[in-house]
Image (cartoon, rainbow, N blue to C red):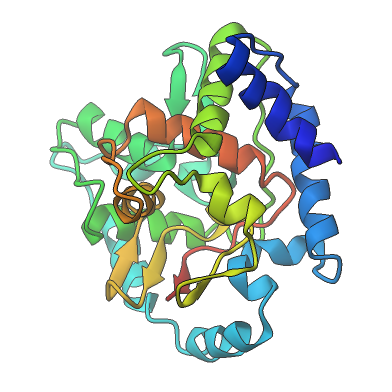
Length: 279
């Protein structure tokens, strides 16, 4: 089975023998997609952008009723106001982004070959603020960062994710680091991202049905009912690590940025549909 190769060759061999036999990102993407096509044969590929609601009918019905009156509308409105509000020097966020920051969410994260690191949208937002002598925003706890990101995602709805991995060692290393973190067991409960979202995808863990690993980055930031506010992707990573009793990384750490790079590449071909709502 192809997904066995996806896990066993790069990870089990590495862990047991200390030898890393890498597959290419393109091979990984093919195996990842094929796994979910086999696991959920009745789910159209495009629908994986809807997370767990692409595979569970009753959950989808509840979600669609919520989306009739989205709880994040006020966040989009606030994000638009903040995005267009001038900095003290007169510049705006639009001055920092291609196409004035409109309709570009699908281009993030990307590998910056000048800085030799992954740039996420939220990191780019704070880089823009620093460039214009403004204090950076908090990456966690919703607030202005989540609202600006939500507005930028909203302007990008329907655009297709097509993340590229440059053919240089640093970019490939960042991709491999994200891939490794995705499959590495962590914490007191000894879970990995893949345990829930690849191998156990579609099954119930406690009261929740685990969503497919393909499509996760498409709808962030999301309004989480349990939190009563918008949550960024990296805050969600931290929440998952807390649940398995592992120590979270700092917001926009290299670990999280590399993980987002891997996960977004695995979602190539899907539409941006954020912000979204989740339990």
